Amino acid sequence: MINILIIEDEEPAANRLKKMLTELLPDANVLDNIVGVKSAIAWFKQNSLPDLIFSDIQLSDGLSFEIFKNVEIQCPVIFITAYDQYAIDAFKVNSIDYLLKPIKKNDLQTAINKFKKLNRSEPSSLDINKLLEAFNQPKTDYKTRFIVRYGEHIKTIKIEDAAYFYTEDKINFITTKEGRRYTIDYNLDALESMLDPKIFFRINRQFIISIHAISEMFSYSKSRVLVKLNPPTKHETIVSTERSGDFKLWLGDEK
Image (cartoon, rainbow, N blue to C red):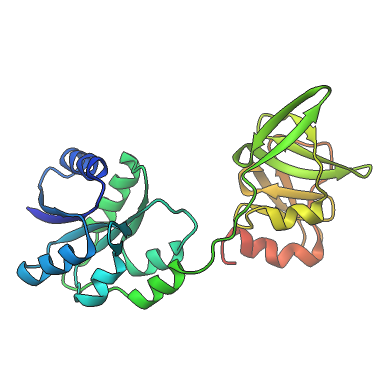
């Protein structure tokens, strides 16, 4: 039997999590669902630690980090958050996993698998100060969509549908994952500050590419890299010498 505590102030979300846990972890025993910081602190003072905690970050009366500042927790924690850019690295270091709302069954299964692989003989601990520091960092707002025009038509393109941006004959273009090309009002210098650097990288003066658009890579002369894109382009896409080092770090997400 795996004793689980859920800390979640949204009843539908808590019920959905319980249902998925029943399906994915048959030996799970949900001890309780706590809805606030104060009530969670009181619960821990009166009860033994569970085997696993699922904790939303934003609760009705504050951040759940305040719970762990007041109570010494030595069991694994899986954080639940609606934010995909806050404190993610800190979550990876300080907890088993983090789950984005709405929770997907596959993601929950992955988190459960990580929990099962833990060495139970080694107590788990949280560095709450690091989590708070990371969570309170100002969020950078990157472009989520672009307006493009073709003929008399106007449409929006979501950033997740963009494969790469490039310039040709002093005209700037966006190419979608479907291979459609549109002119765009921003030059590459402006685009660099608008795009999420975890997803997009400027490989040379002509191209900014998405990590998801890379189909193949080959060693080129010296330290340079030849990148094959999907959808294909007629242009030669080679990472410039001065950008090669940063490009390799970017590939490994070590920025």
